Amino acid sequence: MKKAFTRFDLTNKTALITGAAGLLGYQHSAALLESGASVILTDINESQLHATRKQLAKTFDSQKILIEIMDVSNPKKILMVFNSIKERDGRVDILINNAAIDPKMQENDNSRELSRFENFDLDQWDLQIRVGLTGAFLCSQIFGNAMIEDGKGGVILNISSDLSVFSPDQRLYKIKGLKEEMQPVKPVTYSVIKTGLIGLTRYISTYWADKNVRCNALSPGGVFNNHNKDFVERLVSLIPLGRMANPEEYRAAVQFLCSDASSYMNGQNIVIDGGRSIW
Image (cartoon, rainbow, N blue to C red; front, side):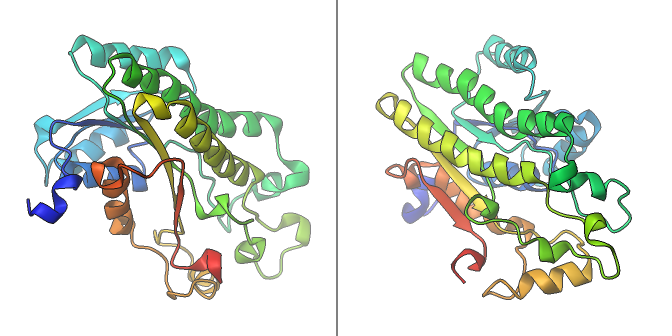
């Protein structure tokens, strides 16, 4: 590795990624493997988790890719994974809180009426916040506390969203010809969770600062994933770079935030959205 990039080296470090079976979970895992880390992929979706590991193993050393089935909303399940790692004499040096429920806006979605604020179901509110926000709190509490107990410290990275700094533009999701009360919207939970993660980031970054635990947040903009053409056209008109992100474009940011390259960065929300939030 060239001298300029030695501070990005994560050799002999182990990272745990929640929601690793998702689109960005794969990319976060690949980013850390590229930098030499071992990764523990966790998710509630067992079949997709195995598929993600298989895909990563085509490029990276399979011995550096472990998987654990973990429900981030259940502290007992998190502790089971924590103890499993501990029994192998393992240590989590980097925690990426990525798990979330991200409801997609579908034209044929019969539940779109229920996604609207005035109709939003309390059970869905509780479920989505428990996964996306409470899950990050629980994982940080359990794995973060272990980082300070042995005195070695570590890094916590919360994956937020550009919707942590501005409100969703519901015009993006409108379907021509539908009555207003049937128009799909980005649910309230998404904004609340992603904004809440920034508060959690700031809290942890100061709470454990003297214990050598840094905590930052990464807020990606929209990632292209075979979206509806009309939606894409509307969204890119709001982005100075004129396009959505490619999935791999956040890898370098993850490598920076999880390594010594960002050793003096703490409590920050790094927004990477093609410039949308400043236009």
